[in-house]
Length: 314
Ligand code: DGJ
Image 1 (spheres, rainbow, N blue to C red):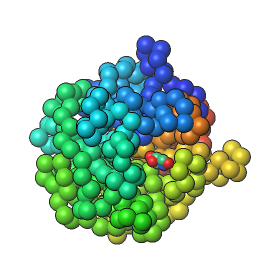
Image 2: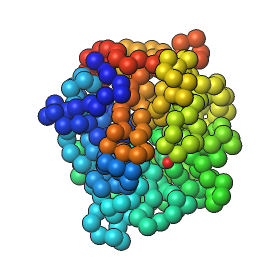
Image 3: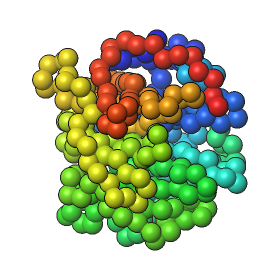
Image 4: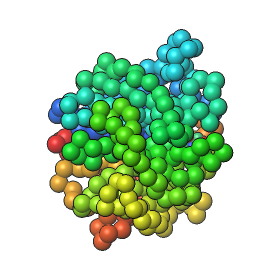
C-alpha cells in the first residue's frame, strides 16, 4: 500500500531517505537510489551521499547502504556540504552501471552547476567517481537520464549559461561509454524554466514530465511528448487532474523525480516524486502516483493511499 505524505520505512524500521532519484530493475531486484537529505533548512547539503535500497516487490525495501558517499577531504568534488542532487542510474549494454547527478562543489556558486558522473560494475558498488563537467559547455542542474535502447542514452537537464540558467531543457545524446556527451543535443520546452524532468517511453512515444522553477515551493507541473528524444517536443499542459487539495497545492505539492515502468503495464507507469519541506528537509516526503498516457495525454490523479501490485522485477 502506497501512503503518500507519510514517512516510508524500510524493513528494518528506518525511514527511507532516497530523494529525487529513481528505481531500476537489475539482477532480480528492484533498486531504489536517491540523495540522502538531512534535517533542518540546510538538509539539502550532502552530509551522507547517494543511498541505495532493494526490493523483490516494490513494497518491502531493504537498505543496502550509501553507494556514493560524500568525502572528508575539502579538495574532493564530493566533499561534505556539496549539492548532490537528482542522481539517475542506467545500465550500459556492456553491463556497467552509470550514474549522473547534479553537482555543486563545496563553496562554489550555483553558477558552477555541473554534471557529476560515476560508474560501477555492480549497482551495490564499489562506485568510482569519474568526475564533473558542464555538458556541451552548459550549466547542468535538475536532470534525468533516458536509456533509449540500442546503446543510446540521453541526459535531459535544465541548462543554460551564466544569467540565463534553468531557462531551457537540454537533451544531449551521451557518448558511447555514457560517461560524457556526444555533441548531439537539442532544446526542449525553450524558455519555459522547467525543472525536475522525468522521462519514459510508453506506447512507442517519449513522455516528459517536469515542474516550474520556484525553489522548493510547489508549482504547476507540465508535460510534453516526442517521437524521438531529440525532438521535436510538443508541450501538453499540466497532467494533474484538478487538485482535491487546497488550490495552493499545485502539482500535488510535489516535483517529479522518475517514472518507473511496470511489467505488463502498457500505457501506465508509476511517477516517483518528492514533496519538499524547505524549512526542515527531514520532513521531505516520497510521493508515488499512477501515471497514464491513455488517449495520448499524460494524466495523473491524486491518491493519498493506493495499492501498487506486488511486482517482481523483469
Ligand atoms: C528545485 C529543484 O528541483 C531541486 O532539485 C533543488 O535544486 C531546489 N529547487 C533548490 O531550490
